[in-house]
Every structure is written in C-alpha cells, then in structure tokens.
Length: 166
Image 1 (tube, rainbow, N blue to C red):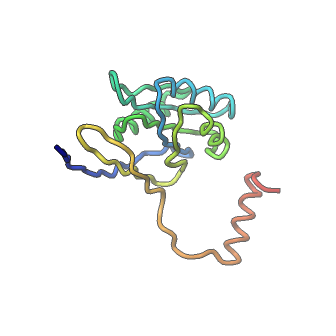
Image 2: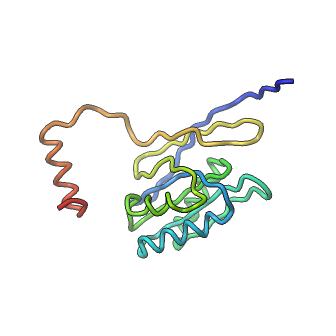
Image 3: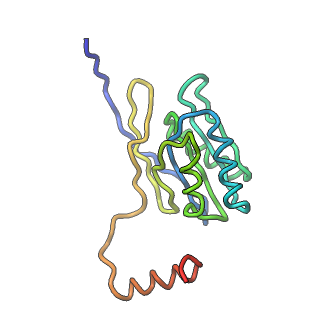
C-alpha cells in the first residue's frame, strides 16, 4: 500500500544582526553546538556569535550556545521559525563567514551549508507528516545587470580596501 502525504512549502524570513552575518546549514548529531562553538573560537577568537541547532529526534529541542546573548537569542529565534530537524543557525558579528566556512565545513557532523550572508534572507521550508526540512534559500536580490569597467574597478578597489587582495 502506497501512502502519500501532502507537502506544504513556507518562506521564512530570517533576521540578520546589524553589521553581521548568518550561516545556515544541515548537520546530524547532538554535539554540533559544542563543535561549532570550538570551530568558531579557534578560527576567529574575537568573533561574537550565537548558535542554535534543531534536534530531529528524542526531545527535539533547539540546542544553543555562543558568546553573545543577543546573537544567541537571534539564532534560537531563527531556528524556531524554521523548525527544521538537524539544521543549524550561526549569527555572527566581528568576523566574516569567509574566515569561518572552511573550518565549519570540516566539522565532522556538518553535512552541508545552505548560505552564509548579510543580505536579506528567506529560507524555503517544506513540511510533510510533521517533519520540516530546508529546501533552499533566497539570498538577497536578483541581478540587475552585468558589471562594466567602472564596476570592475570598484569591486577590485573594495577588496583591497578591506584587505582581501594586495
């Protein structure tokens, strides 16, 4: 007997800290919060952050940690709004995701990263039979054109100004 269930989709807006970023990913084990905490402080010691992780079995709690109470609360709120099992949210200030992503990707229980952004963000969630999962994200706005020579110069100047290129 083949049983089919209806699937519904929702768009969840994620609040991002002022002058901050968010990283959202999927993981698979309860020790995620501790391992992500260690990955962040060992990579960018001055980073301020909050982490939330949605358990997918047992008590199904939102586990959380961090070194900034406001960012931890933002991460917990985003995780509760998404309510997707085995997902995690990291809210960041005083560092950029580019500095953390290689380390976070090497955390053994991290399966994938959906986004790392400071842009307006919507997470597309699918729900079926009481479970929810992240289908994808909408990160920022659609392109408005193709860069020209002046845009290229501005991009290169900006990267040098913030120290990412010589």
